[in-house]
Amino acid sequence: MMFESLRPFRWRETLRDARAGLALAAMNIPQVLGYTKIAGMPVVTGLYTLLAPLAAFAALGSSRYLVVAADSATAAILSSGLSGMAPMASPEWVTLAGYVALLTGAFLLAGRLLRLGFIADFLSQTVLIGFLTGVGFQVGIAVLGETLGLPVHSNRTLEQFLEVLHQLSRVHLPVLLVSSAVLILVPALKALSPRLPGSLIAVAGATAASAAWNLSAHGVPTIGAVAGGLPHTHLHWLPWRQIAMLLPIAGSCAIMIVTQSAATARAYALRHEQRLDENRDLVGLSAANLAAALSGAFVVNGSPTQTAMVETAGGASQKSQLATALLVAGVLLFLTPTLRYLPQNVLGVLVLLVAFHLVDLRGLRQLRRESPGEFTVAVITAGAVVGIGVEAGILLAMALSLLRIVRHSYRPHTGVIHLENGNAWKVAPVAPGEVTEPGLVLYRFGSALFYANANRFAEELLLLSGAQCGHSAGVRWIIVDAEAITQIDYSASRVIARLNQELSKNGVELGFARMAPDALADFQRHHLAECIPSARLFARLHDAVTAYRGLAQPQAPAPPLA
Image 1 (spheres, helix red, strand yellow):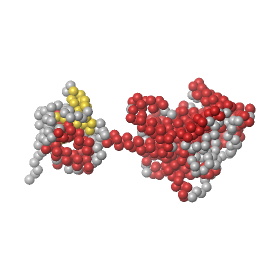
Image 2 (image 1 turned 135 degrees about the horizontal axis):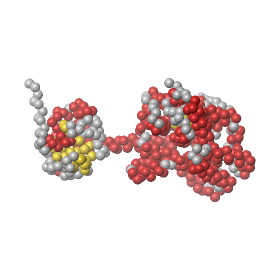
Image 3 (image 1 turned 180 degrees about the vertical axis):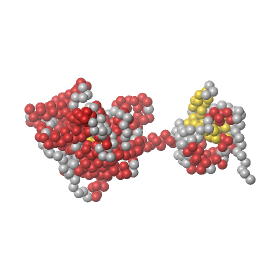
């Protein structure tokens, strides 16, 4: 149903959302102007992302809070991917950016048809912290030269940083003073009151000062004339060869959009106890990017910072976003002539402040304190973004996320279970001679059993039995706590069958306890019940201990009928 995220229509709530939309526009217009610098687009296209894309998502998306517009992460992917294909902000660059948005919209629509909303779950919070931190450094370094009024010619992040360092003695004082003033003013206003549109005040003040004191004559470059009026399409036909070169860029943008938008929308839906349809949001995001492509803008994304803005301002539905779009239309029709006096370095400072926000030092500190291994993964991801680019960084982030899943399954937590005080269970590391009680080993395996980890399963049980040393070490029973074993594949079943034979030769009986229904079905389908009888399958660990102690001897299987 279209425009469901606007319902219900109540005048009091509509007026509140309209006020929130005005506040969002005041805070967001300077920010999206800054994002155009990241994307390499003409300044006015930032305003375009707050027009048709907002309306398209409001019409077709399900999230009541998500703001879909220009975003630093996708802008960085776009700029990195198009680097070298055309001069930045040129008509050719704008056309390429439009096609990236068009292809991104197509990828998102295909994702909806294939119900791929779940892909968002494959990027862990760990690698997202690292990825966005890397984007923060990459974006901050990219605008550092502009902030200081220094020319930078390289497209590589580390080379850009070195260029700026080598030119520090040539920093132009008026540019430095303007940048410093904005850099101090915006955080100070935010500290004074989070509702104050610090960025808008800084832009308005810098524009007024530039016009009054003719700062361009004093060596402070301005953005120049900005095209007024409502947007129109810039798409022209491209050869298939060029379109094929844009597919990886659009794919990377689509992955980032699915991940970031789903995580943001889910967080606010949970906070406000609202229903969320992630697959329907894919339709809204697809429509928003198609609208961006057809209105001369560039790829748009669900933005966490902008969504936080609208919530802070009191918005509770997409009516806030529509109010923002109407105000932006007014700016495009009547106020663009004043933007020609805006100093370029002011937009650079605004982007630099966004970059500071992306660098998640708190998250990194928390990771280092709680999980040093995951901290290393986050740092590697951030380093990859800075060293080899945003596009490669997001692919590495996905690969590392998947590798973590595989690693947890390949090397699950295992151990020998001990019974303390008659009821409490405690797990000790696997080691030769480790037993639950004399002659009995309760062994825990913390993952599904499949071809990659089955050999480790067998090796640890042989180690505990003493079979690797050529004797049983007094162990008579080994009972596997199968609570975490959700499935057993064919390869693992063959390993279990051979393991059972080898243990039997050494006088050790193998059994299982707490087996889940799915794993039990696999157990029977792979004919393991023929070598491990039901008498050695226990519903509870206590039942296995009791049976071993002889208090309830396991019953022999019934003889087959004649």
